[in-house]
Image (cartoon, rainbow, N blue to C red):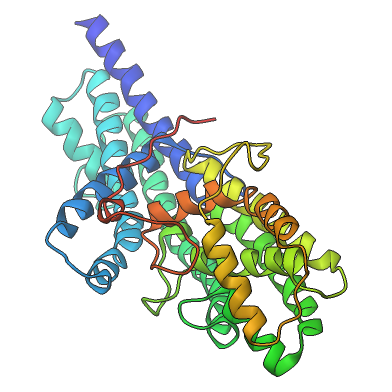
Length: 361
């Protein structure tokens, strides 16, 4: 019997510490830190949503349902943490030997939720009651403090995503972006865009790994997505560097580098595989040569100055695209992003991706 209570004490403390550690890694630690408990909650909710999505037939229906996925998963974290902490303290109170398991459960729940309906019977129990009440308040306070930070990062992200509709169409297209700048602003004005989006990529690399639920927060408009916006900007920069006859812009190259580093960091968190040192043609890209040629033909018909050597232009474009192709398509798949030009051919089954499980690093 003594051995059983000692094991119960160890299990109880382990549950409490594991839950606290999960909350700290999820809400407090300002860096990418995957946690199995948080991940399990998101995977479980995603599985339920995948079942709910089965009868849907259009993207708008799926988008309307998936808009609730991230908020519901986030809000479920606190009940899960409180439940596990309650079980942990129940095991601790029972291990002291002075109360039954049911009484230990009542004391644990009353203490954690600060109800005060169950009185402690010893000095040790009083200390445990106070610690349980403190932990309960901390867990709830963390979520309350976490939400404004998350929505502030979401608002920053969506500013440029919304502005891209004016510059690149809806859904955003790299070709349309180059055509509009050529007609309205002049291609020389693209430099400002590369700088703005380089900063944007730097921001999402930090925010979407330290606050990973942001990855699944959908844009207010169904046709918008931070992932397809990333694709349009990176492809526009790659087309400009490889195919458009304009003075070489280091800002475009920096934008691409910031972009693929950001996408790779987020892909790492979710276990999306890609080559860390890709080279074309050893590693193929999802954009076909025909799509590339059609894009150049459209640009040429509208007066955009192009480089003469299309073979070299294709090799240069593919050399840029291969850096972000795999992580981009992986993120498009797990976020169920809307269809957009050059985001890869997706089958209907891609709307129901299996949960992604990645070990803690």
